[in-house]
Amino acid sequence: MITCGNRRELNFTKEETGAIAEELVEELREEENGSIRDFVGMLLTLGYGGFMDSRYRDLYPIASEAFHLAKEEGIDFYEFEGKAEKKLLYPPVRKSFIIDNEAAGVKCPCCGSTNTSRFIYGKRMPTEEELRYYPECIPAEHLKNKVEAGKVILRRSEPETVEVNGLRVQTSPRRMCRECGKRFKRNPVYISPDGNRIADYRDYVTEIRFRIEAFGQVGREIVISKHDNGAGVQIRHLPFGKEAEAYRITPDKWGKLLGRLYGWVDLQDWENEYENPQALDGERWDLKVTLDDGNSVEYHGCNAYPPKWQDLVKALNSYAGFGYRVKKHQKCAVYTDQEKDAV
Ligand SMILES: [Zn+2]
Image (cartoon, rainbow, N blue to C red; front, side, top):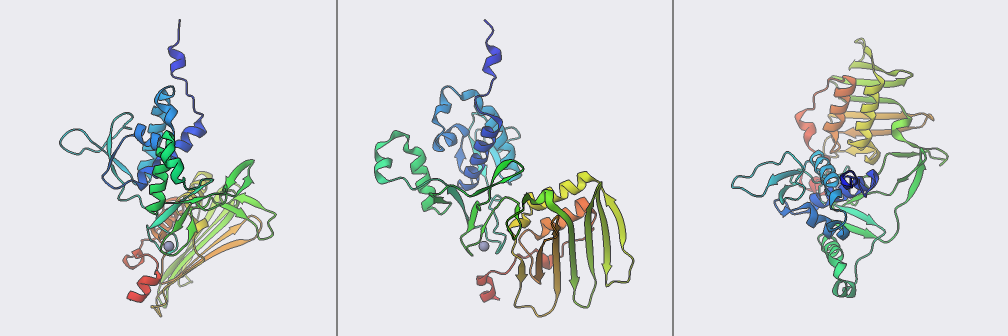
């Protein structure tokens, strides 16, 4: 009887595997730095108990995906056994590992704090009774600890969704900043002011205009306009007068630029104004994103830079040849109220 073919078959669909891997990444982010864990144990605390017996073969794709996603988020895995700590290069499927998540805090797009909590929708706090009587309550206990530690906020309601390109997409935020209250980590869904247009920003942006200028000094402007085959780029050196550089970028680069702006820089979460009230003079920047329906979204700053400033500049440099170098003074994040008081 030939059965080995079946043993490799997955019980989870690709989407389910991806969703569980994402849950694991959040867990890895929320664990104490330097703690020792293993994927099987982590899945148990998440409530995937059935895993242990019948679905063990599903572990590899999940562990593998979680490992790679986690690394993208700045989480590293170190070998637990042996004397020296060694960075793991392959997914630790059944082995314990040491978590290094120091660089994995999620920054608030408004104030730059990494003291942020994750929303979990459709769940409530377990009651004392549930914790006491049900053996499957490891997840409940785990969740309760997380709520108490401020890592997660439970919402009884299901998240809000809209339909984009035939799929249900969540519009409710995934995180909240505990310093300034900003809710963020939203999907890049554009809803026009009249509510008639719902689209993914990445399909809907037609022009990006970014300009940075130091008062009385020099600056630089880039305009990237989508056309049928990629996009046209114009760069001006300010003050005006010098001729603009003009060239084209491929559809691939345009796509990657938008992917970056709405998948990593998270423009959809940015504030429209960043200001440093302490400085009277200095540097100003403006970013304008024009959409297919003629509407636009604008962001401005005056001597204050969003937490993802460097990532924005990097994206414009890599995919559109902006050639701008982030200045030292721009590396400080925006001013929170506490910092304002301290200045
Ligand atoms: Zn904040």
